[in-house]
Length: 203
Image (cartoon, rainbow, N blue to C red; front, side, top):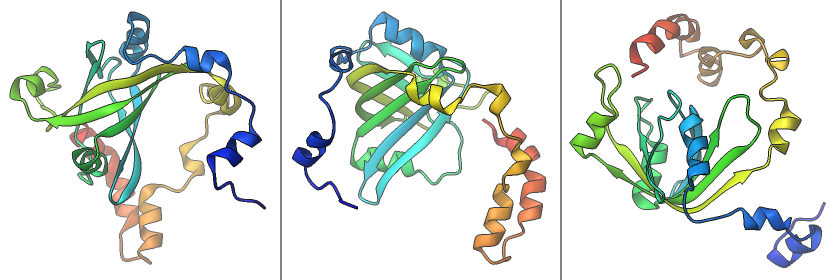
């Protein structure tokens, strides 16, 4: 098997870009793009830093990512596990890529740009849910905005409820933790307590 090691080798393998895939890219959010952001309850955010790359999910009520203006998105950092992979990367390398998904819709929205973290009290308070404020808010400045065709979601049948799996078919997190620690971690207790822990720490 050959390994592709240059842009020239890569270009030789593929046809030229579909013209519309280039035409659709702009550096700002139009009113039509904004409708995707406001309808989306889920976004993936990709970052890079000295320890490597990271891709992390973010989710909340539709429109939880706020469009401040045509070049600025505001994303509250809700309570998590405090690994801070995404946030550490942003502090040292602000480049980010966002992928917005809307349940039932095949087209996704991609936003590439730069981000910084703010602890502005008024802004944090504007994102309060159940009296809980995000610790920080990501301020994303757009550099490229474009829709992604639905081929990947069509092929994967992601929104087809008839193909959804029963969670019981896959190992729960506690079981995985027990396996990688060779039994030193009480996976059964972790999995048993998780539903209540989730309820209490969702915000």
